[in-house]
Length: 388
Image 1 (cartoon, rainbow, N blue to C red):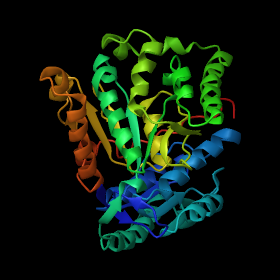
Image 2: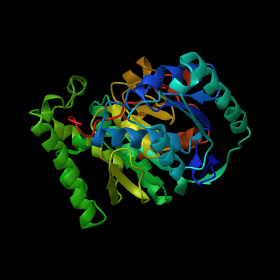
Image 3: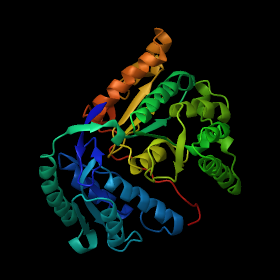
């Protein structure tokens, strides 16, 4: 099974061909947005972090920023900093260049003479990259080169009954083709973590899964919070999900039936193929950002009540098995899975339709978020530590 992608100098494959104008610190976010807004082919996102951080939080911010910049969907990068921030430009560039062989330029607002001058120079640098990127051509790529991210949010009863099991079948097929499938949201594994641990490829991976889940529970307890005060969300309850354990049992269907090869830290790229878990909080925008930073070239987002989440770097394909949601949010939904419930279509038949659209999207078909440019500034970095 093949899709059409962009072969990068480091051997990885992109499904998009963006030039990323990015802020390495929140103080430069508006400058990056202004620069990208005037150029066809440039994307950006609002980064609110990069200074006033220490320890684990600075490390998490750097992981996300480097991961997005190094992403194979990005042809080249123009990085903009302020000049006095904790996330030093030289350190950021060193990590980026160690992971990627793409064109990279950088500038500091304090050295350029202010926002207007910095934005103008960033545009000149990006303009050259955009022209170079336009000469890239898609070529046949194997599914073994794919990292497929799977997310769920705004869930209702149809998520656990239909859309998540369908994505489980899709993930099984990706793994069978030699690729990687990845889902996350550790707090939404609580109550089902023992099932996931039993599916681990090795006892060590099983212990790692249980360890990540327990750490998330302990983190909340240490802060004096109860996870069940926020999970399930009010919308989940209105959609028919009554407990966190019930939500978790529906959530894990996204991963299909193959052995779990590993569980990686938040925003880290998998080091193995097959089914992989990522440790993230339960907030959709955090998880989407983390999986994008972890190398997912496409994220399929299952929703029952509807969602508008996208990404500046990675196409986010939103699917629902709730026919009412598909009709009400037609501007945001990419695939209607409701024929399973409304017309008796089998899960396997809908999985085939979903897989076909995934191949089209990998090969260039735009998602609703890309067409509407919704989500092009959505990037949320989770905190590794509330006190550092």
